[in-house]
Amino acid sequence: LELQRVAGVNEVQKARKEKKEVSLHVNSVYIPSAFDVSPGDQVELVLNFENNGQNNLEGVRAVVMIPELDIYASKGPFDVSENNDVNARVLFIVPDNASKGNHYVRISLNGHDKSGHGLNRILYREIEVK
Image (cartoon, rainbow, N blue to C red; front, side):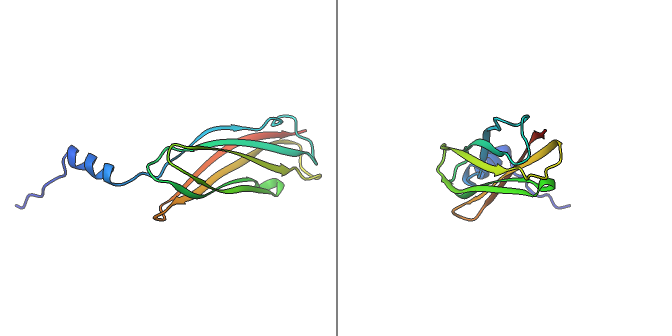
């Protein structure tokens, strides 16, 4: 019978400290006219996010999509230092032929650190086309 050594809690914690974390926190998503949108309107989405990881982030892009309305808009790229935040304002136009009702807005944040470790955050919000 051969026994293998299992890493203890201290060794695991030390390994975690040595590996710098890539992390992005979304503080807020605000769509002022979310429930009063008409076809042809320009809609504003305001996003605040912060780098709460241990590495600087590069090339962070905010992408807004509503596939069923054929909407795609983006902002960036942003470089975000440790413990700093970004306010991004993304504008998109609702097509004239948009169907009435509620539609999910897909918001994704993508980027990487200097060593290429990527990050991806996806959120959903809702708008109502009247």
